[in-house]
Image 1 (cartoon, rainbow, N blue to C red):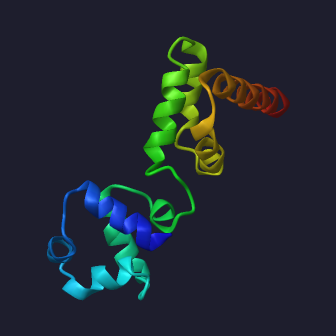
Image 2: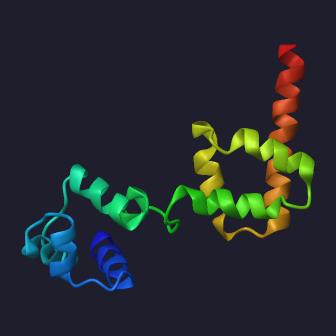
Length: 133
């Protein structure tokens, strides 16, 4: 999956393998070997590629179809535009590490389903606040 994702991202930017290698200070053959699945990048190279293409390492490796974390966050924000209370609650949640995996799962959901999920999380948080208080 990595090899095809790398090629897809490179082509989206209109770069040849040689041009990409030059921009990243790599050997020209490295990109070719990655795209042919003849070689795997180390973690530093993965991070460098992810940063260059503005995608997550998970996206590069094929673990998710979300290019970067803001894709999910933006979709949730858009879904909550017409509900100020939920939008404000979302603002307090969106950077929580313990919920980021859940937010990634919203990518294929419609806005009404996203609202339901945020309402459920809000209800749980409200209940925990009442029990802690």
